[in-house]
Image: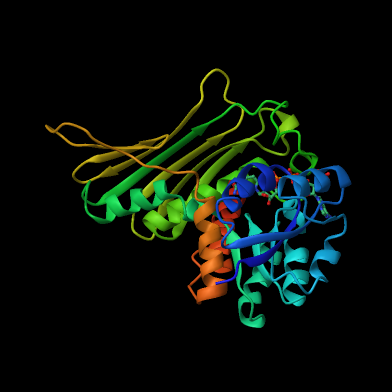
Length: 324
Ligand code: NAP
């Protein structure tokens, strides 16, 4: 089967550091034929890295190129709706980075795209494809800790202003609610939903500790899910002197602790069971699914509907915080 001829829209951090390492392992499935960045240096750099492919500074030129079958959209979040629509209008298959859109109005409009257009569309929510998250689900589904009834996900980071993400101006002067909390938090919402069902109700508190990181940089979200799992999601970007990323799931027969790539199952009177998962974050797997959908009629795993629900869960939390 022929590789999909792919155009890259946006040659920033995600394109270079996350998508390119995956795409270069998938040369039998994707051929990058043109790249675009509105500032020429980044376009040129990526074009060279991808094998001296042509580059342009106006994404409309990529969309107008009949040779290109699919585009990967890696632009500032507030452009997702408009560029996705234009790409679909141009008859391209689309993989667009998360979050699906900058607000619920645009996300809702994008739900209609799955009906309207015949081409493949997916949101690049890599957490849905990450072998680590898939293994967590597999272990829970096999009853390894009994019935899960509570989960705690603590993410304490210190995002200094020198950090590459914090240097991105569209993130600091964000045109979508929640800034970094929304940008990153949709990943966690995808996993919570996948493991424990829809998010039923919740209360949240948000704070701004470092105003240089945008509107808010800290959130605690307490919610219950349709499978009656009570969850606490602590998401903090200005944590001084302590960094941690740990998911703890309490079940009726044991506890699961996930840290790094290790999943530990703890039980009373038994030695811990530890499984280390080989994972590069799920980027390769999301592109494999995109390819399978285009060439072999496979189902898309990260649909616009799923990404819509991830964003809604997160924005509902922000709204709950406002109403507290
Ligand atoms: P970024 O580094 O700012 O990349 C965006 C690129 O788009 C920049 O190079 C920017 O150029 C360019 N650009 C802006 N407006 C443009 C336009 N109208 N036409 C063409 N190019 C334009 O941001 P990023 O970190 O890569 O994030 C991009 C997307 O990836 C976001 O949706 C983000 O949420 C997502 N992301 C996902 C993950 C993940 O793990 N899945 C991680 C990081 C990011 P200039 O910088 O020159 O303005």
